[in-house]
Length: 341
Image (tube, rainbow, N blue to C red; front, side, top):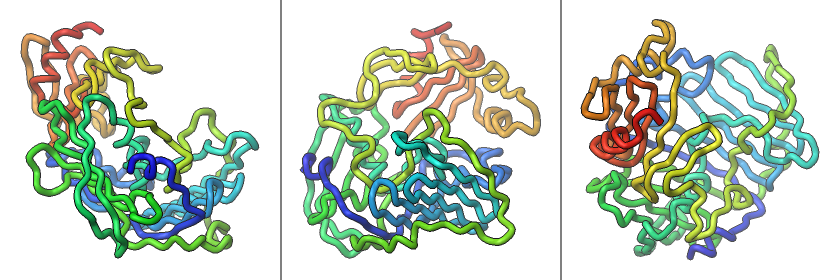
């Protein structure tokens, strides 16, 4: 099943995807509105988003994110990439140089999956000795037969109970991904096709013509930008037993450290002192978010805590950010042993 999932290829598809999330987060001032036409971030972590997708190969992809107040379209047609927002009728146009096929702007903030394939890739990257992998019975998703792959952490200290991947029985691509908090009966996060067709979309679907009055900005391909989000298998390939994420205590390119392994690992990173103290200014949304979080303290120091059903984050007054799918006590323990780092 894992081999089928990771080697599946489709010539084309189109469909409607719905992403829903209910993480049990408190109200966070500063995450709604004022995003300059971007997606309302609160809907990504507690709400619902709908997207239409079209795919006809690596270089022909279209994603339309539908919102109450407008639409955001990301279109790739060969070397041409467009990102258009209806809210302010603006468009960014980029031409990708030959040999750099994956450098393009993304429609959503980094790390947020827009398709079941992206969510599945992230889940499969977690497969290592800390993971139990099982299967369940048949499922039905978007009117198609599917089977379920279940990933569950062996360490009960993780806040994640299990991740369920519903895989198309014939095409072997993910149709739905559910993430459950420990002990929960309903998924905290779901990314799923509501409708899907494996007919290759017409080439005209990937030709973008800016609407009248659109303000167009032409840009060069950015160095190291994230790849075009698309339901495809040539991106973010993973191999069972060889997790992509770091394990143990390792340093990332940005100076961050990962403490622990598997599902209970904790990310420790430095943040600007003004962000940690929440004094970035009244107009800065980061300050509003930080100041709305409850104050906590202990032998490790003091700071602010953000808790949800799937993850916990601690922002210390001395400028550290600790986050993981673990309880606050685990973060406090790591904060105490990593003071000043």
